[in-house]
Image (cartoon, rainbow, N blue to C red; front, side):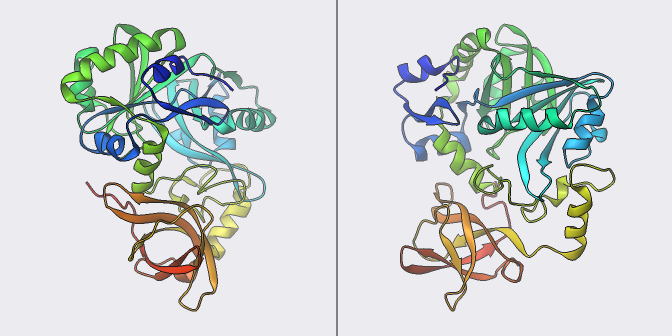
Length: 360
């Protein structure tokens, strides 16, 4: 199992550590609900250094990215990022990722920890255009400093105006005494804040200065369990749960990142699927009675017929109710559709709702 550059720090703080995507990661410190509320109302810090980073460079870097991703990376300007996915040949998704335009001929791809090798191999097999590829995952650490107080708490650590970085934009600047840090507003919690990409050897210094600067704001370290409840309240997909090798981006509600003004892997078949209409859709639902939906629970209609499956579920700390994402047949995908979640032997009533669940 791999450690991040901060594993010893988490252990020293008494974090509960678990194996995750081949890494020894902090799942919680004080408790999921406390940590969740810290991010919703204040500021918290996640170590997400297990994520993968690939640099794609050279005159044909964009051509490769356009070929392997569904979104249109030609619209990116330097300092802008884009959510996208890597489609496979069978209508499913290899991974979802974020594409950063670093320079005119250089892009940073940030991929999921569990898929680093898989994604690298997939993109490599498609690279017949001679783009230069570097896997820098083992050299870089990543902190997510999240919450409504993040800007104010962190402003003293950098010479740039943090409040001026718009959502899905980034700056390369000084941060916590370290130069050339990527400061990115591409959060996964829905409560604002930044991601900080820096070399492994600098990250402990950054961590310490972040906690020093954040002390007056009640800053706390946050584990992966709260990261999951926060992203689920926003209706954000988690690879391996809500999207995978068998789910199409159109079924997953990711039509907005699937652009048919260019050719990409399997684009012809995905376009046919778009024109014909999908047979199932990923929806958000709230339970209308007590219960907690979980991954792989069956979704049924009023007569008990199976119409789908739960992909993610939890008791939402901000809403105090059971919420989830799941695939259902298209006829049950409309907002306000009545569905039932089979929890053990009980069919608990639920309603399809518009995402996100959590509204500020």
